[in-house]
Image (tube, rainbow, N blue to C red; front, side):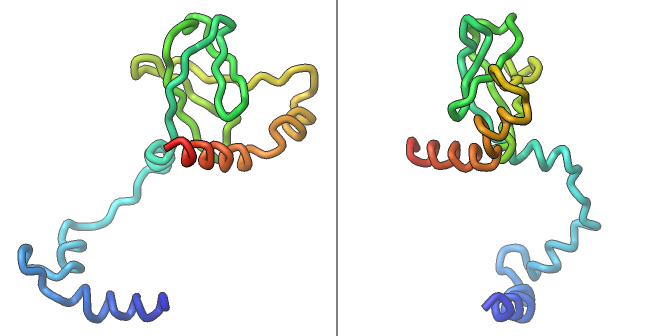
Amino acid sequence: MNDRFTAWAEQVCNTRVHAETGQTPIERFTGAGALHAVEPSLLREAFRWSVMRRVTNTASVSLAGNRYTVDAALVGRRVELRFDPEDLTKLEVYWEGHPAGAAIPFIRGAAIGSAMGSTWHDARALGRSLRLHQAAIF
């Protein structure tokens, strides 16, 4: 089916002249010059998720059932957490649109290796849980 669609797009769709532009889609696409690759950091930033959280009196925030410590200067303030939903071990904190450090996950009473295995067991599973939770809410 994909082969048929590709054949149709190349032989029919991309060869028809558009009524408003007076160009075929492929002419218009290539007419702007050479294509430029997007810088990987910009691409990564474009697909990160963002949520707002209020920093508790203990300088912590929660996300997907996990607690993170943040800068104590942010106590009581609403901050934005930016993160990759597939990796909840790295959260960036923003306050009023400006970077305010990183949110560090709390790992109590165990070495990081075992806590990651038992408490977090898999960052991807947490990302999936967060997506399911948000889908249920919205």
